[in-house]
Image 1 (cartoon, rainbow, N blue to C red):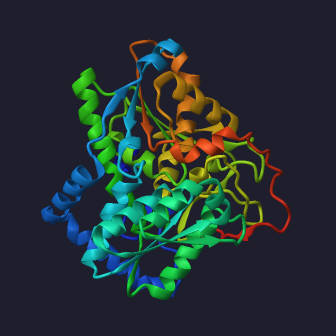
Image 2 (cartoon, one colour):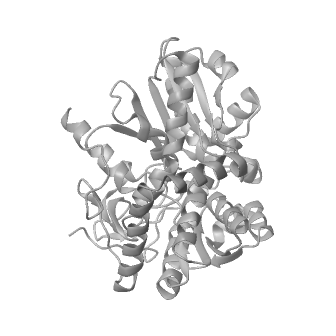
Length: 417
């Protein structure tokens, strides 16, 4: 086993992936997180839990999702064979439902009758609202006012499913602020409430829990690509916000060193302060919302504004496991700009008859660049993490140019210990 392979395991007992992760929380959340960790440890040896989870994913959500060969896009680019994992075909329209179902089953085991969530693009909010309705739980979703405007369709969907959608007006009024409001709610109501965190972020054990509920993506892909091609792919590509869909795809392949892994961040309107959300392009290590990881902050430790046409990628930090995977060189992290993602959205829609989520379009933009350079015998596999119905109005508009990070607009981040 190589040194890299030896690091590709679950976090240590303190919740660290290498030097990233941990649990940086107020005293009031120590007990709720400890109880969550204990409950999660219990289900590891409980086949009945996983049987129920997989049954719901099959009958309610539509798993397994198909592996789709993009014949026309492959022909257009003239290079590697391109496949897409169709998470967009899941109930509610994205991979997020895998985690929402799992966490609500955990909440039920812990006797919680109320769940809260944060959402940016709205897909995690819709998934949580749908899962809460399925199990008869009260649901509150926090969403930045800016995101509510650009993802109005998903706001309506959440409300129709019975969720209360709370607008967040602080700061940039996007995903970071929604996370902060959800955490405040949880601090005040942790006895009755479970926080269904939507990505591989936050304090331990959330990065582990969310990753594990999405591992099914890569496990299915592995079986499907071996069945249709007789071998593993050469390249896996996924977009990276917090990083849940990417970890779900990558995890089953981390030990396969012949498989290249690429995560694509949001380059916004360029890698300038306040104009992008590509943490590995212009960021540093710090602590934000419970975890130590790579984030966008200035030299004084102040969190910088972010910008992306994609609400789901518009967040200043990345999951701690991704930080480790970059550090040890197992995953390459690239980025696509707003303009590149919009062009990828249009090309893929017209070429394959599928509207991708703007988040997923960032991964497609990378494939449009790399695909033609690879030989025809190579295999590229992309996680189509969500569908683009929610983004139609946004795509129809001209993208707005960012103006950077104005003075006094930042919120504080703690320096690493």
